[in-house]
Image (cartoon, rainbow, N blue to C red; front, side, top):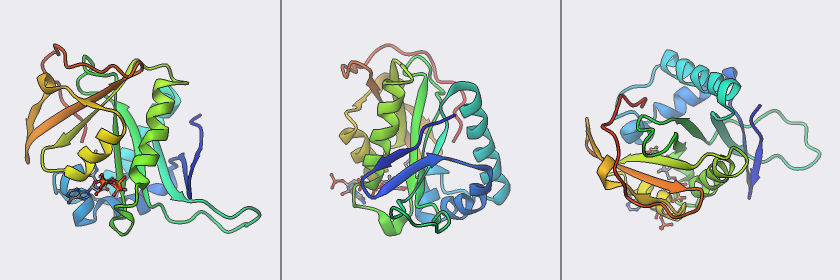
Length: 195
Ligand SMILES: CC(C)(COP(=O)(O)OP(=O)(O)OC[C@H]1O[C@@H](n2cnc3c(N)ncnc32)[C@H](O)[C@@H]1OP(=O)(O)O)[C@@H](O)C(=O)NCCC(=O)NCCS
C-alpha cells in the first residue's frame, strides 16, 4: 500500500484503476505527450495498461504511481477533483544507474509554479528514505528543458555514460543517490525502457 503525501496545496494519492480515463485524457494532450510518449497518441487502452502496471508495481514492490490533485478543504465531502497530473516510480531500464526511474506530468495550465518539483521531491524522498532504495534515476529528452530543470532542483546529477538515443534525439540520464553523492559511473548497456 503506497502512502499519500500532502505537499503545499496538493495531495499525491496512489493511483486507482478508475483514474485511467482522466489520466489518459491528460497524457494525450499534445504538450504532455510531446516528450513523455514521444508525441504519440495515448489511447484509453494505453492509459489503462499503464495504470494497471503501476498498481501491480505497488502491490509487488511498494512503488508505483501517485495522482497529483488539489487538496480538499478540511471538513469538505466533495468527491475527488480531476487529476492535475501524476508522479511515478517505475522499474529502471538501466538498473546499473538506479533501480527505479521517476517520471511526472502536469496539466499545462498548472506549469511553471513548482508543482512538479514539489511532487517529485516527495516521491524521491520516499524512495530514498522509507523504501531504502540506493538511488533514483531519470531519463529525459535533451529538448525537455522544463523536466531537466525539475531534476536539477531534485538534486540529481547527470550520468553521461548512460545516455541513449531515442526517437526524438538524445536521451539524457540523471541520478540521485541516497547519500546525495551521485557520481557519473560505468554503466551496463541499456535495455528496453518503458515509455
Ligand atoms: C516537466 C513538467 C512536469 C514540469 O512541470 P512544472 O510544474 O511546470 O515544473 P516546475 O514549475 O516545478 O519547474 C519547471 C521549470 O522549468 C522551467 N521551464 C518551463 N518551461 C520551460 C521552457 N520552455 N524553457 C526553459 N525552461 C522552462 C521553469 O521556468 C521552471 O524552472 P525555474 O523554476 O528554474 O524557472 C511539465 O512541463 C510537464 O508535464 N511536461 C510534460 C510531461 C513531461 O515531459 N514529463 C517529463 C518526462 S519524465
